[in-house]
Length: 177
Image (cartoon, rainbow, N blue to C red; front, side):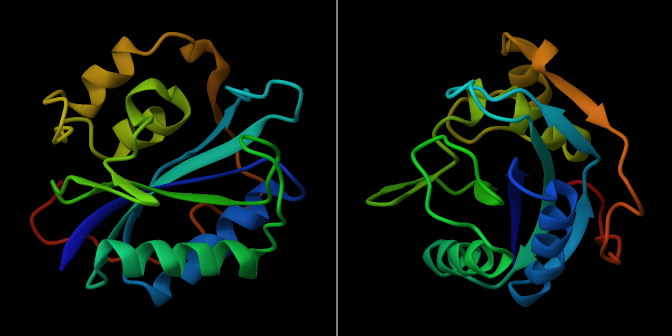
């Protein structure tokens, strides 16, 4: 079973409900083992849009990366993601941040996520779950990558409206991976 870290985000509609629906649907791809707090974040690339709500989760899965990516795209559609322009507003976005210490560089799938090291909105929730996890290409911990990212002022913890996380999780054997 692989240990995968996913980034979740959205800024269109009921942001928390969309993230909760995606987390619930992730039970179909594996076992959700941990979920970060929610973070409200300023848009990074296309700034003329509403703020995002972001989180990260750790999932144990038997799916290979291509199968996982296809399943995540299906969850995005099921949660209501509609086509938009690159880096534009969206109901939900699910990204594979890290998949064990696998490195994949292919058509349509790059692991670790190619822009992870520049994105405080992904690193902050990931650092909450696994600060000492080492990026398999850069050789730096998630905590060190977060310290290097400029613009962290656009990322702040968000107080959820209702229970968070929305799914029951079993603690993994052996702690942080």
